[in-house]
Length: 266
Image (cartoon, rainbow, N blue to C red; front, side, top):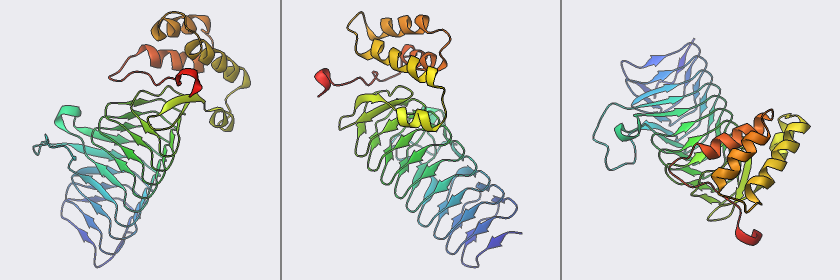
């Protein structure tokens, strides 16, 4: 049975699943879909062609699914899809896509968006991601699973963020971050591997050792280009899945350069 507070507005056309709770002064637009067991605490606004997955909980003053903060947007049909079992805390903003970026913003399952974090238009986010307070993700960012972003950090447009990576607090990322990498600083520079995350998630020790060796070959060697070294690493570790992920990420070049360590470690 659904619980809709008398002060909430759920417009005609909205699809509300089973066991949904809509708290005081929420506004749910006519194209919104709310999955089973979801909860809007209070003062939540969900607009546009937006689908919220099952059991996702949204806290006060979140603004979800409004049009992109992009001056090129002209009212075209665009969407926002948020997965199941997510936590969206106070003041979070998530924008729908734009025609120029594919028309859709996608968020995976079991993600946590802490207070006042922002997901820009046309972002493609994986599952089990954590955005700490005041994190900013600009438009067209792609992000793998299990990424953690520290408080006040930011990612510039058209950046790729690899799975299981960690972005330190207040870091400003303007280049692609390899899977399993850590970046710190503004502008952010690669500072090593997310060994703590790898161990916590139970990756085998031999895979971590292979990844550490590959990291040294990629970023501490001066032989050839980074692309050349990535190809060599890929061929040298055919049975190391973590190494293969990193090498493939580097070889699949995007709009941004690969984030690398500072020269001299500075």
